[in-house]
Image (cartoon, rainbow, N blue to C red; front, top):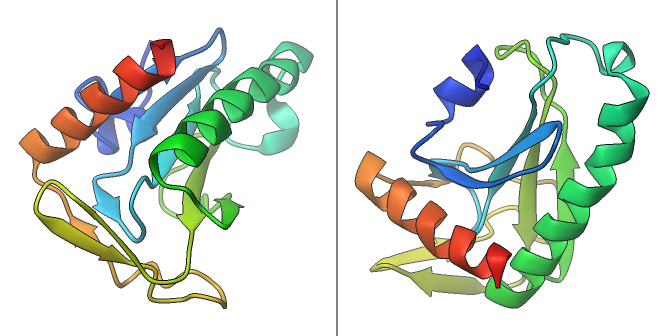
Length: 144
């Protein structure tokens, strides 16, 4: 199942994992290495519209996200941003935060906002192929 927000962030090409109620996607614009989007599969445009099942299942998605990013990014902090200004479906931007930089796939990813708020305008724009490849790598680690 896919909604407009998930498709905007490249679903199904960017799919890392799927729980009963949530999709975990690679964010094609990477303010920090490993940035993800967690999109609810329910038809909801307000956080309070989610079912109790979606709230409970969010725990499963968050546990998986944090285990994956702890292993791959070695983040120092993690930010969950609910920025539903343009994309109406309930979703979170997940930004692993770190001092310094990380390298992957020929790109260098700096956390331009560290140690303050994330600098979303400063990002590495992955091509469709790069985002898909990163999603495939992350998906393999998620299942491991």
